Image (cartoon, rainbow over all chains, first blue to last red; front, top):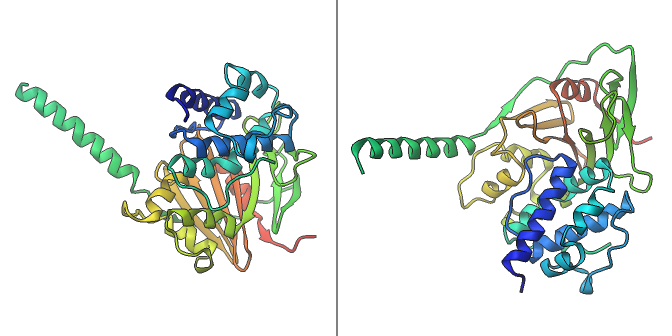
Length: 117
Length: 203
């Protein structure tokens, strides 16, 4: 079970991703494991346009959780590697997944769960 | 609490309530399709079946990541990076609308792209799936939600404050694809994108 502190850390990462990509308004939803799964998929999808997060391993079961995101990318690691993304890469990925992120935040599970690439 | 304090609190609550009502009242507005502009320095650009003639004074560069071809970025002349790009994206109608079935939307087979985006233009009751979809699609926060049509083409501009992300959705009658331009969309770019737009077979 994710702690409030872990959820806050994941929210900071997602918001930092939006700010980096200059996509406003910045996402401001509630973090849960579905949100973490979508965010994990977004990180994986950056591999189609950047090597910045190529080192991140697949999560067990192919689906990221809040705790997994914090373990892999917490304590400033996400921001350090985020800076290696191109703006175009970050923007394209966020625009593709922003509605899935909103739905996940509302507690609506998508029929087709995003999978790690 | 004194009478003044009660009045001030009531006025504040009323103001907040009115703002909340206004935020949910954005309705579909219909406008004329932008006129094609005479263009001496233009480039032909086609994304899927959308063919355009874009002026070089507005487009400095097209960018497609080598390994990822489903997004095309339009960069303004002189742009050092893609931080303010407008991005062309596309997806199937089933994927775009179908994800909202989890909110209670009827079968995607029962709703075409034009019907879906038209319905987004009507303020919805709290128990309607469109109440949430309008929020997710940014309609509630928009300044205007503008529809314009030309022949088989229908364009929907979610026009938000200038410093926020804009969305221009395009549907083509008889096509199963939904196109979206997201990012920095100025009025000039909007006019340029639509002005000379036609629906063409993919070459």
